[in-house]
Length: 198
Image (cartoon, rainbow, N blue to C red; front, side, top):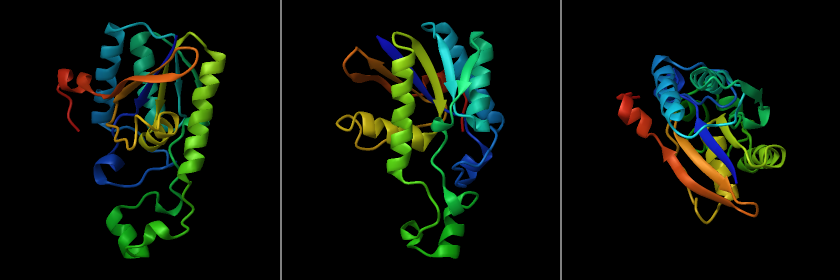
């Protein structure tokens, strides 16, 4: 059995302000660090993990590093395929700013945003690579909301018509040798236990 625990990074100031982050390199805020620490505490008390793989963007990298320190488990490598969906020209803007700049139909404009198909393809490639190279291992993957959601919908379309992932949520995928199963989705019980709020 190969097990992949997929973690969304901790919260950032841009998350709180409703600013599109995409591939921008935004760090965790203090709450985000506390969220990551709460998840790390939870993981250290549960089943052992064999390795950690992360997006190289700061908010995911910091989350992975906090988990790595608590679990005394080095980050194996940073994978650019796990980066967030690129937002093109909308990165760094709020919805209100987008409406003012491009109008209500801004989503229909060519603003250099990465397509969902592209995101799903590289997300699936990253997961397939882990399955191929680390079969039978328990692997933690730290990534981003849109990337995780689109990848889940591509891998398990019957289970996921839509997704909505909270910061530092963990989703568990298991592969039994022939197919994937999701045994845990968007779980943030560690935040409730630790009393950490957005």
